[in-house]
Amino acid sequence: IFGGGIALIIPLSRALAQQGQGGESSRGGANQRTPSDIGAWIHIAEDGGVTVYTGKVELGQNIRTSLSQIVAEELHAPVAMIRMVMGDTDLVPYDAGTFGSMTTPEMGPRLRKAAAAAREMLIDLAAEQWNLDRASIQIVNAKLVDSASKKSLGFAEVTKGQKLVKV
Image 1 (cartoon, rainbow, N blue to C red):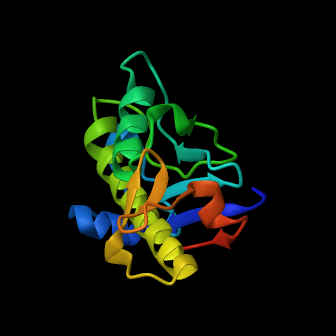
Image 2: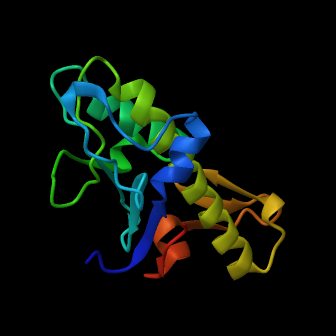
Image 3: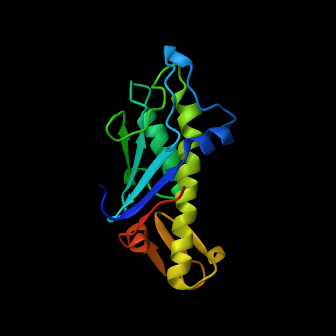
């Protein structure tokens, strides 16, 4: 449904376990179970753009910016590269909604972990393509850079339209 790029999917049970939470929401009167198959979803498109999906919505607290900044920081990419898809129930996982100033403390760590995993996947792909030790590769301004030769590749060049899923 996305074309090429990297789709990063992390099971919610693992994300919640890392945060020390259960898998069921009891806030807001909801007894609905949070999906067990998706905790965070980041897509790196063929053009190198990054789309982040969250069930949270912008209600004037500027979470669109703060969540974008979290992902951009982990990916070492400009905030302008990050596109947020928020609250679109056809695309995003159920995550108990937006209330009680909990978006940043709950969604921030999930997106940070997902973006960090995506960053590591990008470094692994570049190391494989260049046949280098991954330790010699850094991401600088959304470019994977070999510290020795200074050659670089953008996210789109590294992913080359691959559909990669990490569970």
